[in-house]
Each structure stands twice: as structure tokens, then as C-alpha cells.
Length: 111
Image: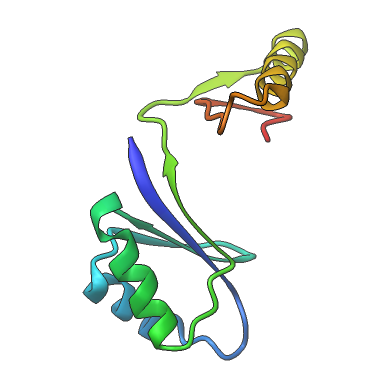
């Protein structure tokens, strides 16, 4: 599923409640708080509108992109399987015809 993902780094200046209200009013679907910052999720159609609203209020976007988000995740625990997955992803990344690589696996060495 395609989703807009916007990351804002945490600073002492940010009022978390005000950020949440602004983002939700602008069309964001969800906001998650992590140690490093705030991750805002949007529908692709609302992505630009939410980014503009945040920028207009002076928020600095650490990253903003439309990404593919898996509907389900698969956990890899076998070290050999994880190594194979990482090798395959590296091979795709090295191919100049490949623009982006997404996956639905989680594991100890997940990138």
C-alpha cells in the first residue's frame, strides 16, 4: 500500500499536541511518536497538503516521501535466510535500472 511518510525530528520547541492537531486537520491519517521524532502517515492524495501545512507553520521536515508500506510482515529469524535477504536487496540496489526496493520482512538485521 502506498502511504505518505513524513518525519519531524524531536526538539524542545515542538508542542506535540499542536503538531498532532495541525497534521490531523491538514489530512494526516496517523501520528506516531518515537525517540527520534514524529512519524506522520498520510494517504498519497493528502501528502502534499500535509507537507505544505507543516512547512507553513515552521516545522522542518527531516524526511518526506511516498513509500510502499506492507499490509503484512514476515519475520525472518534464521541467520542464513537473513543473510540471503540482505544479499538479494543489495543486488537490487546495485542494479542501475532499479529505482527503489521495498520489502515486508522484519528481523534482527532489518534495514
